[in-house]
Amino acid sequence: MMQAVASPEIQVGDLAPDFTLKDENAQEITLSSFRGKKTVVLAFYPFDFSPVCTTENCAITEDLPKFEQKDTVVFGVSCDSWFTHKAWKEKLGLKHALLSDLKREVCQQYGLYFPDLHCSKRATVVVGKDGKVAYKKVQEIKVARSNQEILGALR
Image (cartoon, rainbow, N blue to C red; front, side):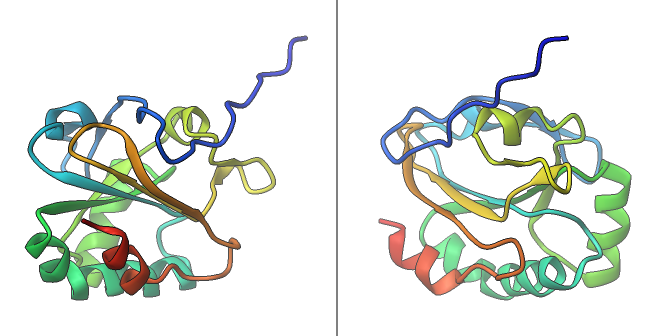
């Protein structure tokens, strides 16, 4: 049987692979629809309802106005279902959209699949208005990302 070959990890300067994923309301969000309009932060994280992911996503909601001031939209992306996202978002009062990569296709396209837990790595990918990766950082799975660092990377 053939083993699926994971894509190499996405790099700054690469054209971000386009995708369409459902948000917590089962609405389809397409990355390329933001091209020329907004910078997009893709905050990949392992799972809803886990401690570091909860802390991190609450911090994103807290800092959302700072991202919006930089003409930026933030999406949390994990392998959870859209209805799990909906329950978690409502429980925490999150203000940013959560995208469901249930089939693990996007995290694999971006080279950010973590096979040990069958989920995405904890990683941040900033896609500029030109559709290219402007910033990328992969964290240790148990270490929360720094919003200040991401905001600093936004032009």
